[in-house]
Length: 153
Picture 1 (cartoon, one colour):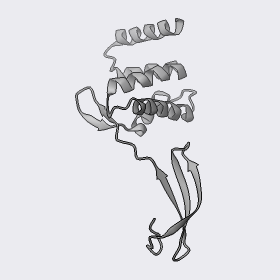
Picture 2: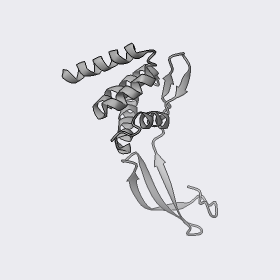
Picture 3: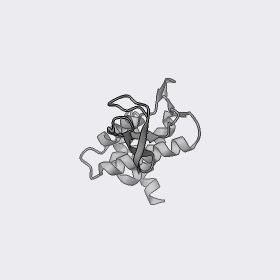
Picture 4: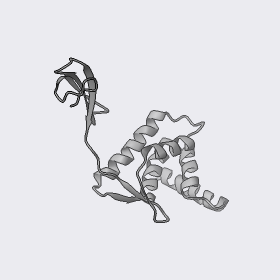
């Protein structure tokens, strides 16, 4: 690892510890030439996960975009940010574990809505209304009936 101070290529590791729930390793290093101490992070490089949108366009999976949508759906609801972050992490983990490089946006949306319905029903309906693009009140009522049916079974 190149020293940021003197650009020497030799450094020794003083300390290593897992971070980010074991997904990365933080290493404390010391340059053998100038004794400058610095920190590096090492993590597994994940292949990109591509989301195929309804109209056929493709974009890289963006967990921040998904989290922003969930935060908007949960506005003024008693849902902790940690719950939403965990939900996004669960969805991303499941998508990556399937071993495919492309997923349809419909699958992502359904996975999110299944989990969100268990967290907060009002947030679920808000998210579904945007995701499914409710055209009128009848579609909205049908979605509510479906939610009630799921809850009763």
